[in-house]
Every structure is written in structure tokens, then in C-alpha cells.
Figure (cartoon, each protein chain N blue to C red):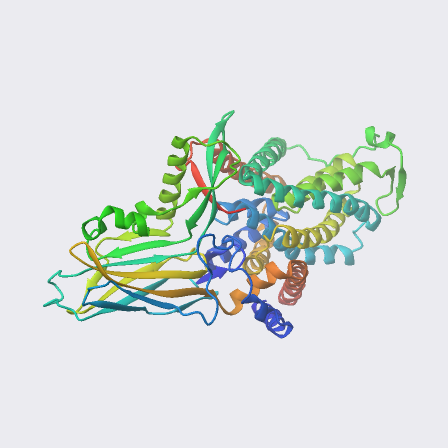
Length: 294
Length: 305
């Protein structure tokens, strides 16, 4: 049966479904990004910014710029490593510099539903829609971020789970009080944290030499595919010295990608092929077992 | 071995779902039922989104019904005319059901709706079966012979217009009851991810008064076409058929069914029905608990619309 499936997929490659998959929206769960632009091929994935007057500058990269979501995808760990050019630090342990690493998925629209009791049954009775909810957000640092950077800086740049800028969308189905909004916001945070999609690692960035550091971040299996913005910020005494950003992309690959593209782009044909597989499997099974029983 | 399910969009352990398919296949082989009404709840309990569970299970029911339908066809146990009438109603029901799934899902009440449907149907059927099989077991113990009843009496079904002759079933009845029955079963198939045999078979026997030898064949005949159409409709309207998951379940199901059939031959009919009723009531209770127990988390997230 699996062989049959593979055969079908090979057929799809020939049909050219694979090629169209790249232009397709990565996932139905991630509508076009609201605040940011999606990356286009050819666009630079690396951006650096030097603070005036700072002697040090930071450079970083991720262990894999492109992560493939294949049929065996079960989450992955990416390593962000970087180096400080012109490091004044005497040793790795001196704590002279602070580094914050932020990995952020595409911001998109999200519906939060709340259960209520109706005649003894628990039903989804209320909901709220939020915009600019990052599909994924991880922040790692050399020590707790409130010790590294001032509050107003973190708020301005959206650093730390506390400063995620998701907001209620205009035109809600149910009217929202400010109390409701707070509860829904908290729910998003709680659920995303539970699913490993929002995380903070206050001691997740480790200096392994006087100028080099690394952080490892887990992307769980349920992460939304698409581009991830990775920012690396270098601090000294609550002052930003330098920053660097690099883009990481999670892409569907292989069989998984063809099947997903097939199911969403040619749903009728996909349904028919599924029916054919089912009928084939049923007939095959009855043939095999009839022979076996005689 | 973990495998990423392309439509359910989650990583799943192949062996767990193979085993699940095998277990339900075993039960369906043993009891001679399709197994959809056990498999769909199990998939939901295992964390597959309700919508995907329903769509995918439809494809699996098709696979497990094909060989049975073919065997019945060879033995000429299919009343094609009756099957086609049932199917015409069924296709309309399935079309409406698939649309209902779409709307209920958008509003965010599909999970609860499915759970409520299961509680209702499994509760009623499980209870009836439990009573019937307990009585049968008691009667057998008392030494009386249990005879399958089949009265020739006419019921209200025979008073309806649009009468048609069904030669294979030796019936001359109105086309309205089979059309309505087909419609109802089609609706259930699309919403609950079942084949509907558990409604169809008793209804054919007690309502339409079809001879028992064509009941199973005709039911399987219409299930094959109904689930095939429902699979395509679900795939195209709700994008909820996961072909990878379906193949895993099919593989487990066909193997399990072979062993189930052997095991089923060793047990008596009324004992089998008693066991099946117990299974049905257990699944029903699990769903009921989900509806009435205070949830540990009151909020849930869904993609933007």
C-alpha cells in the first residue's frame, strides 16, 4: 500500500504539483503575514546593524537556514551561534557581555475560543480574534532579559514574551471588555507555552569562548512552517552595542510536501485517489487473505 | 516510528495507529460491523482533530467494506434496486452533512456536536443491544429456543405512496422510506465518520422488512458507494482526509479483521452482541464525560479565518 502511495506521489511530481507547492501559502493556519513581509527568494536573509560608537559588533548564524519538514518530522533543534568582533571580554565566564536571541515565526490571525457551560454541557460559547500573533516565539539570553535591557527598550522592540504585540482584531464576533481581552491574551500565552511554541530560556545563551556564544532552540513538531526571523542582540551595561538578524525557513519537503500540496491544490483529485487507494487496499486484502485461508 | 500526517498536520506514532486499526479491525471482524463508530471516537481520543478523524475514517470504512461487498455480490445477496434507492437518498444526505461539517467547524462547535451525536446514538443503540442480548442470554440459559422473528404483518410503511417492486427483496413498498433512511444514514456518515450499518441493518430488517439474506449485502453495497462519495466530498470541501493516516488504519484494520473473524466464530451471537454493547456504552460514556466534565483548560486556539 505504501508503495502504491509512493507511486501516486511520483505521478504528482510528473504532473508538476511539486513545482507549484513552493508558491503556495505555507499553511492554511498561517494567513499572509500582517506586519512583516514574507521572504522572497533572492532577498538577503542576513541583516546587521552597528550602534554608533560601539567598538564591538556581533555576527551570528543558525545551524540550518532551511529546515525540512518531511514525513518523519518530529520537531527539531536549531543552534544559533555567533561571535563578537572586537570582544573585550577576558574569558567565557566573565559575564562582560549579554546576548539576547529572539526567534519569531510569522505573525498571523488567531481565534481564541472560550468554553462555557450551557445546560450542563461544556461548549465553545465565546471567542475573540487576535492579529499579529506570532506562530512561534522563543527568547534566549545569557541571563534574565529584565536584567539585560531596560523595560522600554524591550517593549519597543518586542523582546520577551511579555512584550508580544498581538492585538484584538477589529470587528469581533462577540463584544470584548478589557477584562476579556486580558483573559484571552493570557490564554494565548498559556496555550502557546504549553505547546512549546512560546518559550523563554533566561540562561539559554552560553559563551563558549571569550568572543563566541551559542544558543539552542527547540522547534516542536506542531510548529507552523514558514520564515522565522532570528535576531541576535549584543548588550553591555543595559546598552545595545550591535545587532544581527538572520532568517531561517521551515519548509515542507519530500512526500509530505507533495501530499499536502495535493490535498489543498487538487482536493477533488486527491479525494478520488484516496478512494482508489482504499478500494485497492480492500481488494488486495481480500485476495491475500482468501489465498491464505485456502 | 514517527510519521508526520500531512493533513492532520501532526506527528503520529505509526505503531499506535496501526495497533488501533488492528484492534478495531479485530472487533469489526468479530462482530461483523464496519467499525467506524468505534474508530472515529478512538482517533478523536488519540488527539486527531475531530474533523480529520471523520474524513479519514470514511476512507478507511470504504477499504474495509469493499471486500465484504464483493463477496456478498458474488453470492447474489445484493438488492441493487433497493441499494440504488438508498444511495440516492444517501448522497443527498452526505452532501448536506459535509456542508454542515464545514459550517459547524467554522463556528467552532464541531467537536462538541460530534461528541453529542456519538453520545446520543451510541447511548441508544448500546442500551437497546444490551437489553436484547441480556434477554437472549437469559432465555438460552432457561433452555428456550431463541427464534429469529419475522412477522409478515404490514406496518405503516406499507401505506405510503410511490410504491415500487423490489424483486430481490420480494417486496412491494413505497420508495419513500428507503429514500429517507438512505438520506439519514448519509447525513450520519458525513458528520460522524461512520458507515451507518448499525442504523441501516436494523432499519432494513424491522422497518423495511427485507429478508435477512439480502440485508447485509445491500447495506455493504450502498456503504461502498456512499463512503467513496463522502470521502471525495470531504476532501474537496473540508480538506480533512489524511491519506497517510488512512493507509495506516487500513493496514491495521484488514489484518485485525482476519483474526477477529476467527475469534467471532467461537462465540455465540448473543454473547457477541452483549460484548459489543458493552464496548459501545464505554465509548458513549467517554464522550459524555468529555461533554459534562469541567474542562481543565477553558480556552482553545484555532487558525485565523
